[in-house]
Length: 128
Image 1 (cartoon, rainbow, N blue to C red):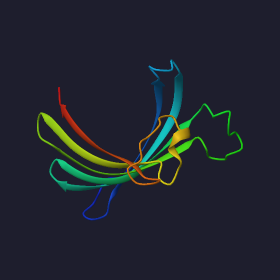
Image 2 (image 1 turned 45 degrees about the horizontal axis):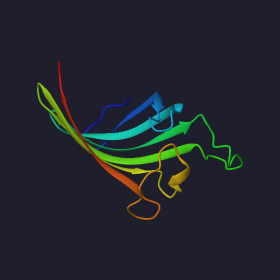
Image 3 (image 1 turned 45 degrees about the vertical axis):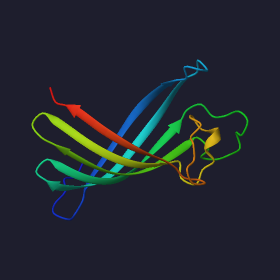
Image 4 (image 1 turned 30 degrees about the vertical axis):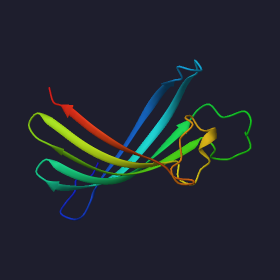
């Protein structure tokens, strides 16, 4: 991680494992995710950021094994976080798997615009 200095953004890189369970199908899946974010401190306890995530699905679809990178699902996001002594608030806009046919992924995403599944996420958390 590199801290932000003025208008020069900081850099954050993280890696994680995700476990998913399909309640309707009973399928278990394990996937790896890597996140890259540039962030700017916009106040004492606030931050704007832009980044990308890459989710690697360890369980390839048997119907299309010849597709290279078929199981890598990119995400682009923009967000803003603000906090105080006890609370954190955040808003994030994500574009999920841009330019990809989404029906053969982990989740059957709904497309608002062709090739552009997106979501708006809000976060509220309390510090202990």
